[in-house]
Image (cartoon, rainbow, N blue to C red; front, side):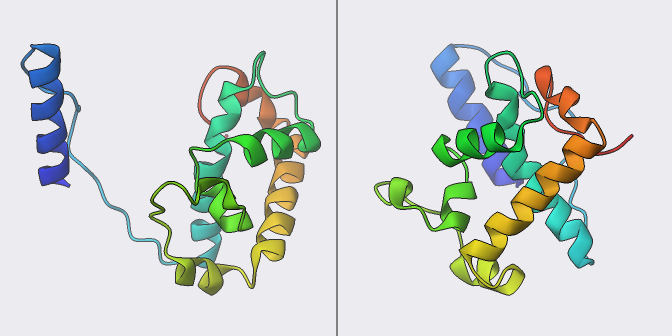
Length: 136
């Protein structure tokens, strides 16, 4: 991670004719040792683009799914096995998907369940101005 962040910082600073740091604090890695936590992280990452919906996400599951299914810059489409990104290099390890979900249909079912949970708890209101945070 240090090589990546240092290289990115040096390139950015060179292109922008500036100096100094870009990132605050140290990189932290946390061990994911429970399936429930891994599921949370997968959906946390895939739901973050919902902040880009004009006017914010209103909690409608179908609106969220339609937006996510059209958002090209997420691995969500890889999990659904949609070919929109095949022209780009994919970083997804398909074995990871199969280890965590039986297939794309199960992933889609789980993502739908998570959207319902967020709606029931009125957590969707947090999508209007910042990235998703499932915590109270």
